[in-house]
Image (cartoon, rainbow, N blue to C red; front, side, top):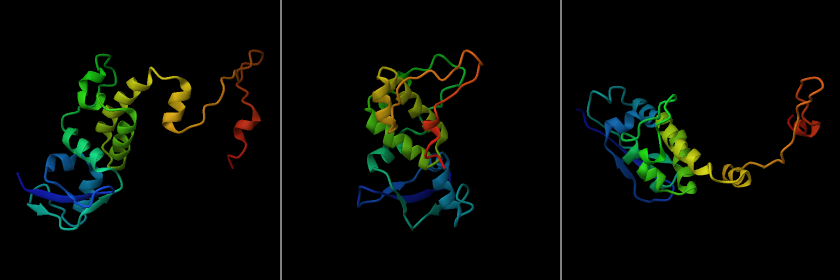
Length: 166
């Protein structure tokens, strides 16, 4: 197997992290594209990238992603057997740590890994109130309302919902 190395600069660290796993790089399309820009045959030839890639996320999140991306398998969409314990390291983390990891997975386009972390987040927010969930996701929690009109069968949201959406 060919040698592939790239340095990653995280926003909170002065020392770059050496990423040396071609398999991990393949699971991170954004990093793979950065390597392919100058090294189209990186999967079949030894490739050492001199210029580091800057990633605007904490190093802790990056190290977690790089060390678990090969281990975590996306839950099957029709499976009811998946449980948070299938991802024990992620399940042991709090919601704020997971938020940074899922945002990094999105940034690096690691879709399957993102689904795994999203599953753990979903299970953790199941026990929270609607207000706590809205605060976690950074959205406004609007009061419950019934917009369905029994008389005509149409949904009639108040006009205030559409104000300021121009």
